[in-house]
Image: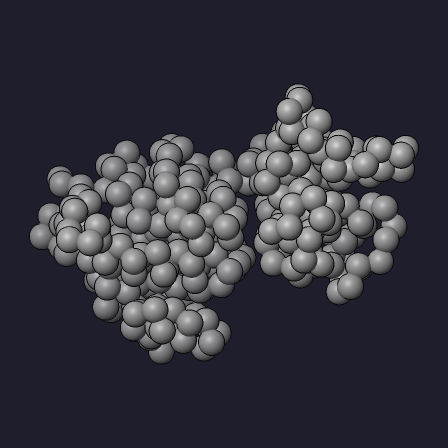
Length: 322
């Protein structure tokens, strides 16, 4: 079987070829939030024809203004697409969108290629795969790493779970929205990679925040400490790219009242997924569990919509504008 190919056109616009006899240039996209909206626009920039849907009409209009066609329902997207990408918040949203009445699986044409980039429980991906397979559809789970900035700049890493054949078929297409696609194993293994990565991210953000707070309380300028950390063994994404201390980097959420970025409610959700998976696997995650409780507590204090780096003022007992 052939694979999706990326062909150079004038003006460096890319398009897809064919898998068997099916044209993969018509793409559907469901879920146009902070991540999905940028991912959809990057597909448009690469020359794909795009049909989009979201429950938020403003989100649809935003992508339509960039050249997409808006749809009235998930079923309409499915009927007009050869590839469908979903980027949804929670387990139940994914199940409803794929397996519900007039959902993707009941509406899509046989042979349609499905990519779910939501971050969900691996068991949900496996459930959707089995349902899709029965209807002659192809499915991979492809959650992403790189955040909103990566979605905007097209530098996401896709963690793909599915057959080797389906991974190869989807690779160049996924690279229309990111810079890398990694095959993690069978269906659901992309989700395993994602929740493990995000658990580590949460732990590191709390650790960086505690270290910088301690240094400041002992009289050390947090900017100086950050410079030391970022050239020493404590260096990590949370210290270097998304530093939690306001003013150290002018372009990150902490310097904008912790607006935008990766929401506290979302990291709490991902930590909950990790906790559930760890319980099933009987794998101890002491720091992951503690991080989950910290972020759930922050949610209870009204900080769910703030970037997860807001843990810095939270552990310092400072008031944050909600």
